[in-house]
Length: 379
Image (cartoon, rainbow, N blue to C red):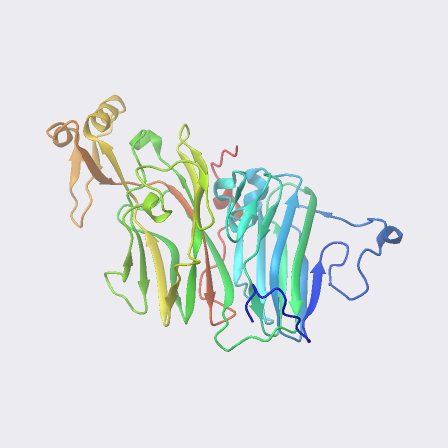
C-alpha cells in the first residue's frame, strides 16, 4: 500500500517509538522514569562505548524515521559517532557510516538544509525518512569511536511492526568511504562493486580541494559514472561534470533542493558538502552496480600559469591514458584566455545509499576513526 494513502487503516500494523524513554519500544512502557515526568530524555556516550538505540525481532516491519540531536556537533562527534543498522539477525551491518555523513553532512561541518529524505532544519537536529523494511527484525546501534565523551544523545526511532513486504522489497544499505588524497586517474568509488539486485538511491559527497597544488582552480570537472550489471571498461550511465550531477552548472554554490543540493560551499577554504538523491530518476540494477566519480579539474590558462610559477608547481597531469604532463612551458604556449582540463588529487568522501535484495553486502568495514577525522576544520 502506498505511503501516501493516509486514509488506509491497516489491521495488523503496530506503531512503535524507540527512545531513552522506551528503548525497547514496549507497549505501555514509555515514559516511566521519574513517575512519568520526563525522567529519561537522553543519555551520554563515553569514548569507546556503544549502545542499542532500537531493535525488534521475530516479525516483519519498517523503520520509518530516525531523529537525533547531540550537544556536541563538532567534527570529532559528527565523524566519531557511527550509526550501524543490522537486518534480520545478521552480524554484519548493512548501514555503517559516521552520524553526520549518514544524515547528509559531509566533512564534519554542520549546516542547515532540507531534502526529500534528510534534513537538519536549524543546524541542531538530524532527520532521516528513508523507508527501511525488514522481514525478521532489526538492530540499530550508535558507537562513540572518538577520544572524548559525548554529554547528551537524544534520539527517536519510529518504526512499525507487522508490515507485509513483497519479495521484491530491498533492504537499505549505506556505505561511507574517504580518500585523502585520491589517486591520479583512479576514479573515486562512491559505491564500490556490489552484487545482487537493487537500487542506487544517491549519495552525500564531500570535497576538500588541494589548494596548495591547484590554487583556486575549479575541482569539479569529474564525471559520475554508473557501471551496471556487468559493465566492463565503459559504464551504462555517465554524467557531464560534478556540479552537473547535482543539477546546477558553471560552478557550485550553496543551495538545498529536494533531490540535489550543496549545504556547504566554502569558497574561501575550498570545502564542499553536497548531495544527489535518485528519487524520481531511479537507478536500478539486476546483477551488480558500481558508481564512481572522476578526479578532474579545470582552470583558465593564465591563472593556472600564474599559480604554477608563484608556487613552483612543475606540471599538471593531462587527462587521458598516457603519462602526459602539462609543464609550465606547455601551459605557457596555450591561449592564455582558454580553459584546460587536468587530473587532480583531493580529499574526497562519500556516503552512498542503496537498496539491495540481501540484508548484508560485501563492502569493507568503516575506516578507523583517525582516518575519518584527520584534517577536518569544522565550521
